Length: 391
Image (cartoon, rainbow, N blue to C red):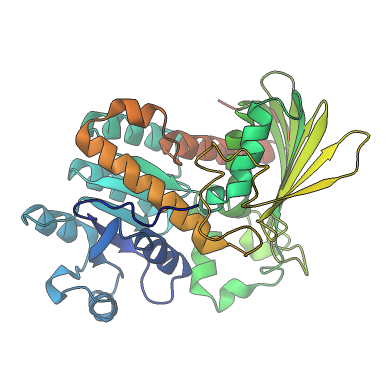
């Protein structure tokens, strides 16, 4: 069961760039970071409109002089304070991530960045080098990987419960953009602009989530891939609103990914199925407290979060905030991840490299893999759906 008594002598002083009024992602970051009292939200550059951002920040409880017009001002002014921020989360459009993350690291801050961490692979690699030089945490927010049953799947694969992995099926195929919603939705519009979003819309926006989980659960690395993508809403071209990707993994396993924003009638359809030589596992984010376990020749089993038959010696599996049978969801997953970020930041500050070596959180390596995958998909699709090397 989750230990709510765990705390630091002083919470980590934390700020945000982006995530202003009306931002679902901004609210998710704030709710998750403050859930366990390990972070204290003290500063923000929340909006491109300085007055609107200041009003919003003050409504959230920030002091007026710590509601900043832009991230550069925030980093400079906070550095002058004895109680300045120690960490920052970046919840801005994709094309701005690299420059903001670089400035934050150079200012001596730990960073949590929305995915994709950058548009280009070279930028992500440069950020990793800078984070190592500054000895700061650089994390990427994959919000679904805090669910306990994702970690149960990981433990079962790693302990050999399903045998060698043969096939990985991934999907994140919703229907909420099956019409040209971006005409009246600014939050959707920038995602379909290649100057802001980068080389991909739906693969980068949604497909990277199950892709990250595939790597987390199986530990397998991609060798090559082939991508076919479409713009069913023609105005979105050259970015795709539907794509199918085929993967070859190291060791002989194969996989597929369906990423779509035009799957009419679907809520999320974010699923991952791991097929092994002895059994298969399947997890669906609309039923996150359950994991389907199918052994060849036996009845299918539904494993439930919070039960003693799980691999509860894994911190990821045992991070229960309620007992089994009570539904835990999106915000619990995010809070679990921010809890792990806090423990990582504390270890960085104490110089505890031994703890960090054994401590999982979605770090820059996962972010780099996501950027590589998106760029490889674009290369493949733009050449007519040909096979390309992952690296």
